[in-house]
Length: 423
Image (cartoon, rainbow, N blue to C red):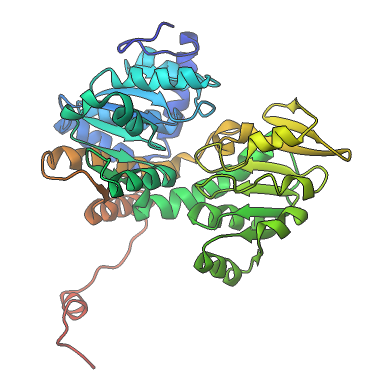
């Protein structure tokens, strides 16, 4: 399909009906977003708003896009990762829901950035990003759009780090809400979502047995905690590596073996990077790895494993099954890289469960409304999701699960907020 600002660019429009069914299935588990969708549909708080979104094109993202459209927004969507697009979902959004989507699974780097620019051609008032490629494209080559932009949101840790760097260097030119930093996002999406979906992706790609394997989790942030917890639950022996001493100590206290990568590289059967940085597995590590070691990444960009060095050191490489590349190394050793080093939970599986993304995308939709209401009142900086939005999402999720919690009495509230009342 020819790409333009109204038609989108998708793999095959005939996949639309399949995609529509998948979107509806995901919606069953997204009760909080459904409540927001219903309010948006009734009140149209986003009427006339143009939104460009660079996100993983999945069934869950589709429900976010439909919620924003229900609120009156015009939405254009592109992929934030070349391997994460669900082609049937992209078709359904474009063909059935008239949301122009620019995303094809496996698209090359040039197409990826062409799609970003196509999504920006609607001249957005709000940007939604997952990794900050949309925002950096605007700042580098589409700066004429900034005069109409009210603000944006950022979904993931890597993107927040990039945007904070831009803000610190006075390069960020409009306000961004760091949805990733919401408690109802990173506590659940990063820990439970990444934990489950990462192991799901590796299992689908390899069909390995986890029990008894030595799994090296590189990075012990919220994503690393989730991956380590789930691997342990499946019977793996888990080693954690870290550069942050407090997180390393936390991993020790959580019962994991902690060491540096030079040692861990010799021990691991499966290596999983979740650092948000680059070259967490580097040229020093490949020569000492075990024969048959498997490497996968669940950080946002495919730079956490030093793939150029792996290719240089190897004698040859070839694909042995979908999402699995074999690298033949000197001394008759083979190493395996999954999903081209890209997000394995989306490259080889379906990403986070819908019920987890429900909270993340509830934060996204409410943050879009918040930015619109704060138009002209926020300076160019990175902001946390307002506490009342975070709390609202948590309350709605509990209510949807039928769970009741306590509330403070007036006396208790006074005590907790007074310096005068002591023992």
